[in-house]
Amino acid sequence: MTDTPLAANQAFYAALAQGDAAAMEALWSRRQPVACIHPGWPMLAGREAVMKSWASILRDPPRIAAETARVLDYGDSAVVLCIEKIGDNRLAATNVFIREPEGWRMVHHQAGPTREAPAPAKPSGTIH
Image (cartoon, helix red, strand yellow):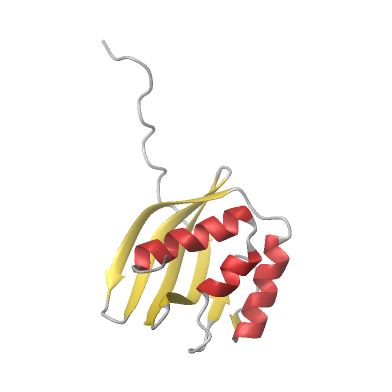
């Protein structure tokens, strides 16, 4: 369900981690222009180019998790800022969503290197 920008963001990373091309297709807008900038790739504009890029990536999906998501809500559009954790690599990501009749849909994704420090490890075990 993509009834909030945060839910749409979570669905995006679930589709990516699971290699679910159908879910990825459903998350991107069919009504508005879309764009994507993958790390190290050229800028992609237009649904066909963006979906083709995701089809390529989803053939061998990364082990990815999104952390520290922050939503900037602008009414019928929203920006979600988060950190993508892929193995030991951390990327800063910007995901832009718009509200459509079917729910929140992505119109832009961009990820790139960051200097943001990893979140502190949570203690495990019993503390005396």
